[in-house]
Length: 312
Ligand SMILES: C=Cc1c(C(=O)O)[nH]c(=O)[nH]c1=O
Image 1 (cartoon, helix red, strand yellow):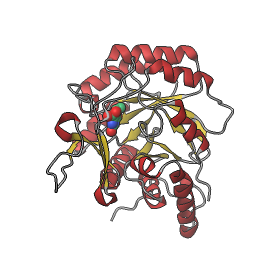
Image 2 (cartoon, protein in one colour):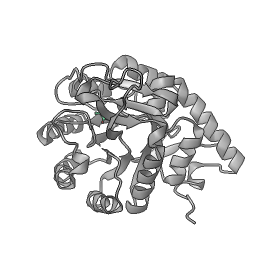
Image 3 (cartoon, helix red, strand yellow):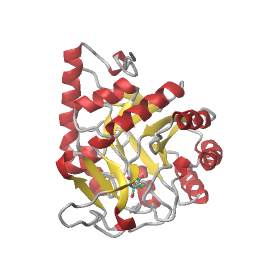
Image 4 (tube, helix red, strand yellow):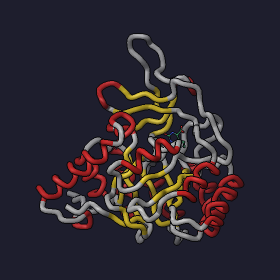
């Protein structure tokens, strides 16, 4: 079956790529993504300066394959590293490049966006408003007024279609209020739902210790356990953002969850925890599983079932 898609006007040979943060911090990581069967790739969220991030242990999978917890603390090589990567990227390849930016201030986001715009490259920007792990920095995704102000400054600078990475919302009123903000920006072409469920706490039963070191063990939750929150956010924004697209991320461990994300309304699907645990071979496996599911159900393309979840 045809699992290709178009996102922000850019053609992806298949709908799968990495969630920003996983397999994408260094050129070596990104090379693995280019060589994988993913349809695209996105870089680790960049800040203006290079960051080491939080002390380790700062990521761990959770027992029983239910998911993961992380408090990486936005480690990255600094935006100029990713700008350089984007300048040298082979855009003739069939895989489009996405760039994640997560400035620690609006001023930093402005400077980074201006640099990418000045370089005039085919890559697509995804502004991350939802990093839950920078101590002392509340994530902007939960401050709609601040996010609207940020978008009113950045959208005109970026000019081209771009996207934003959102935290999960858990209240219908918040879906409504957030969508009302996003619908004000014509070149805001997609929203990526969801980032990790912020500030969970994983505790080892035997040792009675928190599993990760930063923030007293508090970190973002990902993996299968966040699937149903992710599907809700994908569908809520699919319903509320006419003319815009949604990238679905959260809980994709097989073709089945990728299928459910598209059924909920996703135009593309990112994979985080499962990619971290299985490696880039996950893309070929999940792509085949999704294709087989579509054949079994009689769907030829993603459009045949995108957003067509049935209500009772
Ligand atoms: C960009 C920082 C993020 C991080 C991090 O670097 O701690 N972890 C996440 O789960 N989501 C993020 O957005």
